[in-house]
Image (cartoon, rainbow, N blue to C red; front, side):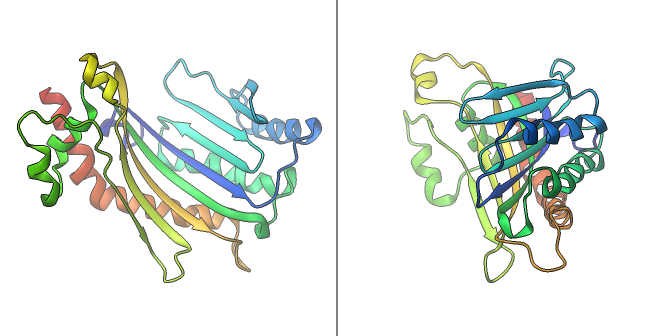
Length: 247
């Protein structure tokens, strides 16, 4: 398993390629794209369509680790849940990005944005908002307010976004997404839901001469790994693990 697997209940690496123009939606083109993917990954045999013209090819989800890819009106996505390794997941994404210029006629000029996201899910039955506050703390300006007598947190979604260049074309976002609502707090009934931590690196705009979707994806994946290794593990994931274990 990946060295990140023990840090949460589920770990996944996804990419999204968003285009400026509509993608081909005709039967032959869409099926040809997925057939090329399936030749490399024969266990991806579950094909179906959703509303709004979204087509999905994926492996069986029952084992708890699986690959998937999808085509929407202006987006191509690829993901792997609980991969054996980071390199294994990125190899899948490389093949998808190598395929799209030929199978779906996506030019480097047509790139609205390319995202790489590392996600970590924790299964927890309880108030996610309160758990995040206890594990990670609150900014000092909010701390006293949140700890007033009779106060119960019903929304606490820490996020930070920053740019890595002056033109803001390469951006990173770290966000935490609790799934506890005011209804859950009011009813006193907390379903077993996923508390998610997302690390996303995004490149905006058309690619430059000499760049490719694969090289850009590798750069963004490297940024995500660096942020996870140097900050997220110690300051986000491990404190959440410890707080859930105590509960």
